[in-house]
Every structure is written in structure tokens, then in C-alpha cells.
Length: 159
Length: 276
View (cartoon, rainbow over the protein chains, first blue to last red):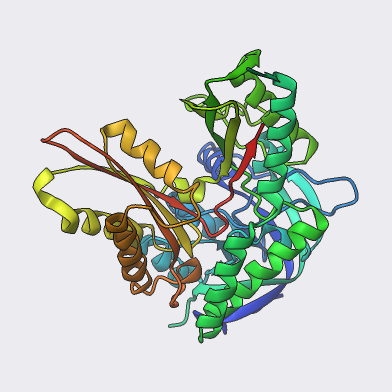
């Protein structure tokens, strides 16, 4: 299990572990499911949510180009995130104050990957499997196994 | 009179979109290298390193530089002595459809209300102009939403002058912060009216050189310096490089108006011109 409690803002981390992609449409759908009291189709426990929607995978590739999308569009879903049991979120750009507060309160980290480095980041994905919301196309939830995936800590939860 | 078929146009458009999404143009590449050598801190250097490596991988392995392969804008200049065999809109859209399917580009275009994806990245946004000569030139810009969403338009007071214009532009850049994937390029349209200013801002990004008007070129350089002083830096994590270029287009406007549009562009500034 990755220990994120020692991560500090500005740290450059090479992440090896499990990451799930989810962006606008997947967040909206998950929130609606939780509101209806339904169970989510994925167990995110101990993993990271990556705000990303890759290009289609070419034959012979693990995954297409897969850089981060702008995180602030997902700020409105922050209340839901601790319920998923995740370690943190990966995206790009600043977050709102409510996200900072939630990170501190629930022990989450927010990290930034380099926007526009989708080709480089695709090489650090060792396995990719679509696990939910297939109908959302590039916005479906995909389970990624990443190896030395470069991220920079933007929000930590140090007291 | 030169005859150009829709098939020729579609083929060129498709190839140009591959080029734009995979091969960072040499001018931008040099600006990124220069930025890398100017930075001292680890964070901006790490990010710029990644962008340079990314450009290499994208070109060599045929992987799109960015997963957001954009919605396509096309600036079309049709020579008066060109005869088009077929509809130019259909020809360009066919090229878009072909490229996004064939080259495994992300289809990112949806109905604004139902949010249903059109599944082939059409329609493109097409601006047509008639010019002298017998050439057909099409500049294609597949532009991502991360930067586009940070664009702003203001109808300023005519008496706000240059200072008011600068203030508005700097405010837009500061509010955008790390969201549009800085280091950014900035397209600015000053004057005209509401829609003209926005179109000029987008079209200004298709330039690689400073304005030919010395007053405007000076304003471009000053704005670039001021933006770089904000310290926003690569990806908004701090640094000396926030802006790689400012391009301003102007047009006369009403005595009571001063429209200013700011179109923010990411560090790749993807666009390719094809001439038939």
C-alpha cells in the first residue's frame, strides 16, 4: 500500500500502482448512483482517480495518449471522493478551496501530471482495462497499472 | 482557373491533422528548449523536460502528443481563380472524419445539450475568406478544451485605452493559472465587434511571427514579458516561463466600442497550413 502521508507539496513522485480514469461524465454518473443508493461498479479502495480520457488504443499499444484533463471541473464532486476510499486524485491545474479542505480532512492528496505529455505518460502505463461505463467511450472508467508514472504533489494533507 | 476536387481537399486535411497532433512544429520546439534552459528550479525543469521528451515520443512512435486531440477549426482562404468541385464544408469534414478514425485520434465533439458524441469529431468550425489568386489555403487547428475554456471576451470602454486592454488580458491569464497547460500562447483580437474580435483572437494564433505593425508588435512583446513576470510557470506550478508568444490582430471598431477577445492556447499550439 502506498503511504501518501509523507508526500509534501512540490514533491516529484514516480507512481507505481493502480489508477482509475474517471472524468466529467463518469463523476456525474457515480454521484447520481450514490444518490439513488446504488452500489458503484468499481472498488476504488487504495487507488488513485486520474482525470483522463485517452485517445483510442492502436493495435499493439497498451493505451493511447493519456495526459491529464483540467481538474477544477471535478471540484464540484469533491464531497463524493472520500466515500470512494481513494488515496488521491491526479489531474492538472489548481483546485478550489473546498478541495484543499477535503484533502486535509480526509487524508487525500491531489497531484498534477504534465498536461500535453500524453504520449510520454502512455509509455508508463503497463496495463489498461475498461471496467465500467463502457458507453461513455473515452470517458469510461479504466483500470490502469502504472509504472514510474511522473506526478507532482500539489495538495498534501500534512497537519 | 484551377480545379480542385473535394477528394484532394479531404486527403490534405486528413494528413495535416495527423501532422498537427503528432509533430510539434520546430518553432514551438525551439521555444520550449529555450524555456528549459532559462529555468533553474526543479519543478519547471522537470515539466519542460517531459514536454520535450513527449514531443520526441509522439513523433517517433506516432502517438498523439496530447489525448485531447481537440475540435477542429479551419481557416480557409479560397483564391478567386479556384473552381471547387463540390462543397468545401463537406470536403473538410470528410478529412476530419477520416483522420480521427484512421489515426486513432480522440473524438471529442458532442451535442451541446444532449452531450451525445458525434463519434467522428465533426463538424469542424470553418471560417471562409475569398482572396486573390488561384490557391486554396487551409489552416487547421485541432484545439483542446483545457485552454479554450479559459478564453475571455470583454466589451471595454473606448476610453479604457491600451492600459485597460492590458489589464483585461493579464486578468484573463492570471485567472486561467495552470488550467490551460502553460506555458501558453495568447491570441488576442482587438476591435471589430463581438464576433469579429473572437475570430481574430483565434486566427492570430495561426501566426508564428510578431505583428507587422510596430505598435502592435511592441504591445505583443510587452504583454509576453508581463505575463512571464506573473510566475505562474509551466503547469501553474511556478517558474519563469508562463507565455511563449502573444499574437494580436486588430480591426477598426465603433466609436463607442472596444471589444477585446483573448484566446488562450496550450504549449503545443497545434496548427498546420496546407496549400492546394
